[in-house]
Structure formats: structure tokens, C-alpha cells
Length: 284
Image 1 (tube, rainbow, N blue to C red):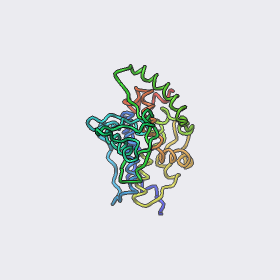
Image 2 (tube, rainbow, N blue to C red):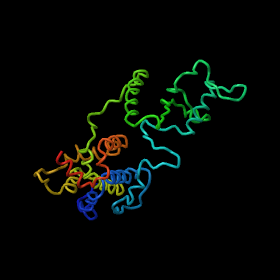
Image 3 (cartoon, one colour):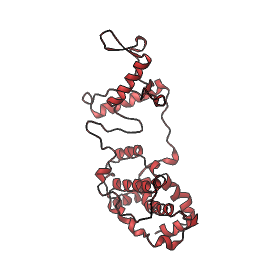
Image 4 (cartoon, helix red, strand yellow):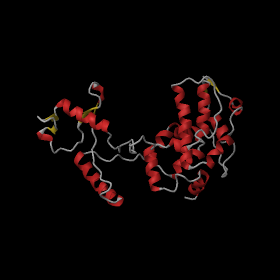
């Protein structure tokens, strides 16, 4: 592949064009990061005829980018492990049980469980999502009926915390350990700006479309043209060891689960202006 030259990128690239994120909310900046990552990674699956300069912001109405917009009568869920069970899943489970005899029809046409499992919890039960598709085999998680009107949130959270401990002991499934290399906090979000992640991905998008490679040194020259306020000069090693790894794993590091937990612990942050958020991080 041909190596890109400074003038080829500088002809369309200006670091100032990406300062628009400072006026957006934290939530909006996250959405812009995901969108730029999408434009870069999706090039593997679609052919772009030619490179075009992005119009910023890429997402005009952040409300349309909400990850919890649901269809009518569909409750919100957390796609990593907490999901209200829809009728389609219930039907698939019942069909699986009818197919293998765990559930049967009595003489009056009513469904009855097999006698030896009548009081068993529905957990780790074999389940075929599509009876005609042998590759759709799976197992259930714990099916739980939650009466929102029976307890306060505080009582429910306390009860759930106790049950979680018991369920893990009973099932033998231990809590997932936190990867110390992936600790998440305010400083993680601030790296979007500090590491120039959106402009980095935009240059990478240009390079992929034009089938060129951009050296770490050239990335550093474009993304960090001047010394930082403390006098530090960012070079190719910073791109190689810090910026590039973070940018390439951005959608994993900033996944919806850790974000929801972070927003729950810091409810004031989500709609805070990003420039104000960066000042807050600076003084922490």
C-alpha cells in the first residue's frame, strides 16, 4: 500500500473542524464517536466510491440515537443480561418443552409440566428458538416475575442484591471479574477529546477508502501539531501505544453496559456540556 503524505491529508483535514464536540452534551459526543467508528469500520462491508468530507455533527437529533427507544408495548432492556421476556420467547420455550416432553397436553387440552419437574425453576433449560432449525439450540437464563407495585425501588434493589448472591451460589456461576485494563470512569470519556479519537478515525477512514497507510508519526503531526500546555510533545510512539489502541477498541470500551452503570452513578454527567465535563475531569 502507498504511504500517505502530509499534504494529501492536510488538503482536507483541519483539527479545528472537530472542536464542535465541545459544545455537545456528553451523551451526544459518545454517539458521534460511535458514528465515526461506524463510518470507518463499515467500509469493510460497503464500497465507497470516493472520499467525502463529513458534515458535523453527524447526528443532528440525539433523541433519535437513543439506545432504549422501544417499539410499542416493549420494555427497555440491557442487552448484556437483563431482558423482559416477550411472548415470542415464551412461545419458543413452550414449543421446545412440548417437543421433548417436558410439557404435555392433558385430556382437556390444558398444558401441564412433567411431574418430576413441576416445581423446578426455569433456569438453564434446553430451548430451541426455531423448532425447524437445529442450530437454534440454547438454554434459558433465570425467568423472574417482578412485581413493580409490590416494593419500593430501594426494597427491590436490596432484595435483588441478596438474591443475586444466593443465585450465584446455587448455580455455581461466579461474578465476572473486572479487567483492570478496562476500568471505566470520567477519564475514559475525556480520552475521546484528549486522544483526538474522532479525527483519528476520520483520517483512518480516508486512508482506507484511498487504500493508503498513515504512519504513526504522520498521525502525531496531524493530531498533535503543537506541544501540549505542559510542554510535552506527542510523537509516533504516543499514537502507537495509546491513541490507536483506544480508537480501535472504542466501541468495546464505551459499550452500553459500562455507560449505563456510569450514568447511574453519575446522573449529572449525561447531559452536561462536554467542555464543562472536561473541566470537571481536569480538577478531579
